[in-house]
Image 1 (cartoon, rainbow, N blue to C red):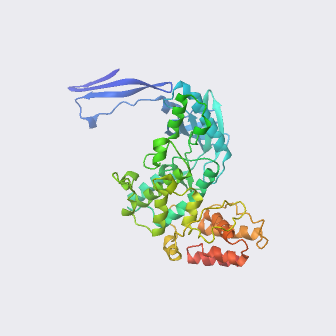
Image 2 (cartoon, helix red, strand yellow):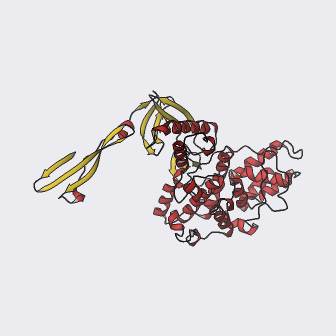
Image 3 (cartoon, one colour):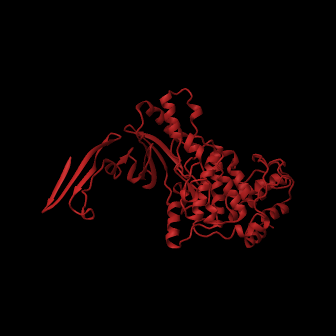
Length: 452
């Protein structure tokens, strides 16, 4: 098909082709022949079916589509108004598998629905709420909470444009402390995110916290559950398991589709050094030796360097194996002598750690945070102390609430670690032990005054 436009001696010819995607046919410009300078040509607007369906369409007589947020291999994501909830914004994800063989459609749909059931069961303050899963006119949708904020790719670009500076070391340490409990939570539920990057972490301006988004579908380890599948379906599932961004996802995930909690920790480490340096992963990785060279761009304290390099280890077994291990390293680690103490109720025992941050390193490592990293996170359920006769549960709860105001979500972990190391600790000694966990001296004094 061609469109001719003759203007005196100038000649313009546009050749279109028909492209069918998911049952929708669109006209796409294929070739352009012209005697007119290319910068003077205004191409005719092509109305696509996607644009039409994303504006003003009512889904399930409830969700009014506002605009398209994005599209991936499994479907398309919309921003929509929930007319049953005072036109509050929400996110609709439609199941629209791209380029999937007919024999695999049902399997991919099953995975989509199973992921919906899994996400429905998890509830965390820093994960968008999963609200519903429904089918409307043969179209399958998921509904999630809308997060109002900018992702960290946008925040990094804004900083580099305005100030020429990326995020500081103190900000990254606090950012890690706020996100690691989220990873620990999903890992405890058997979920591996597999696609952690600055694009998939949003600073929620309302919660004043980083929020982990875009769990997508097919991102849970599924190979073991489909051993009876046909070869073609198995190949498809394995392919879809290899999600993640090149540069952020570790080699075992990209090459073989293998994933574990350490895979997410690797991606979180890459994200951290990108935010620290303001450089893309390919700029920080030596293409010949495949070694990370991020320290050449942004030297940090030896303690944080050690933590990040272990997160970025090429071999999975050389990385931290859990988010709690990283938190322990960031908070100073656990000595060999105390590692054998019985854990507090509800706390899993951890492997011995050597101290990463010495006492003299902690003060410069944790200055007052600035920018888009919050100082007062939400309350987290304090650790149980039913078996400790020397400490009243209400006092431990109060300690947890006050400590959270100063150090964030890591407060729960610090209290549990302190109680595990000192089962018979007194109330006074607990306060003093927690005071040492607060890097800012003025905040440490304020914490003591509120409890003593």
